[in-house]
Image (spheres, rainbow, N blue to C red):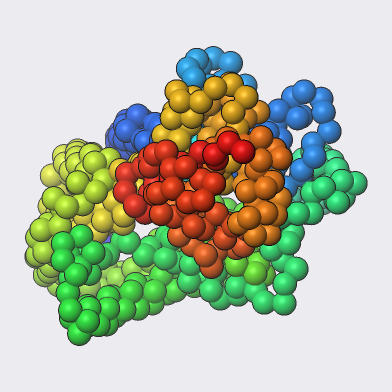
Length: 598
């Protein structure tokens, strides 16, 4: 009897109740073990990156400001940002102390929700790709953008948690999905797609008129808070239109397919890194000709990665549609609507890709699984061929990892947090692989080894992307140094001009009234600027490299930074008396000047 016939005969043998029970118990144990590993890994990440970035993104105060207006029963003056995140942060700040409780609460909120997010993603992914869900969740958990936003008290980590909660509740058919989706819409506008996805699932699953009307009613109720906010935006458009997100859609040009490229780069751009490229960044920059050849090799690697992503993504979508996979419906609605909305923006940033990273990678993995089953249908690939393939993956992976290791030392100096994450990630992979092997009765050692080596290769490659993005956490730390200096060396009533007054005020809350935005100083020339400073009783003017070294930046022009451009030099300049430079280096520094008395 041939090997294939033996396999079919074995599979055709009926399972007894004891076999089914044992299989179910083993499956449950495996699932709980996977959840436990992800939970502890998520907690470790939360602890490691709690407050890792000392100074938050400059948008952070704006989220808090609009929430304070709502909680004080005042009418907001700006409707650009929704109040959900700020309300959560302010509520949590009542339970923490310190010099800046709201900022601490923002970090704490991320730390609490991140492990929950990993578990929710695992429970969702399990329904699509089975046991491979663990590996996918781990890859998304160490994504550079995930780590960067975990260390920042911004909307994305909270938004992702509520998004995944809504998806999970949709898949388990709970009406609470509308509540979770509603909460997400109060954090960011594009979460409104979740309500549409929930309604689509209800309508398709229950096709009678009564159920359709009920789904529409539940969806309409979930839209009410967002609708009220939109009405408020319209009524206060004159004060809200400046810099509103809607202005990103009013231009004649749109990012289009460029958004898909940005999405791929954010989701998969660091999964496999060329060793020569890593060495060029972290060790020694090669000659122009050498750099060109490295770039060509890197482009080939990225090209293959993009082809794999497109193949998996397209297959996953087509298979879901052809097989009428109902559980994939909300995922398809979410992807289609969000991608369409972001493609018509004039421009975009990686932050606007973050919410789609998990969904995109899940669909790719789902598609790859389908392709794998089609290729190996009826187990047509001989076991010896699979064994050779696994050995090739192991050898290639180990050699690739070895070539990536020389830059580890420099990357660790550049990003201490990245080094700790690398060690924890490898430990999680090895632990999970070993336990899985023994739970599977010590079978398939080559397969498990190949998966382990491949995951370690991804972790090593991704490590350099993480290190580059998060660095040592001291980005913009010069503004905290400015606040500390101002508190220690100035008198109440003495005013300071800076480009980020709200950020500086976080660390000098008692002097908030004395910290003025550079754009609030009149004048179009350096001389007129100085005259306006005297009229407003300004004592100190701070020039910062963050914006001062970027004359082509839109904010440089908007805030008319050219009026203080001469202050780039740390020395006396006319009416300006040089006082001190604070910061890590010349590209992360602030020059502080005191205006001479008239």
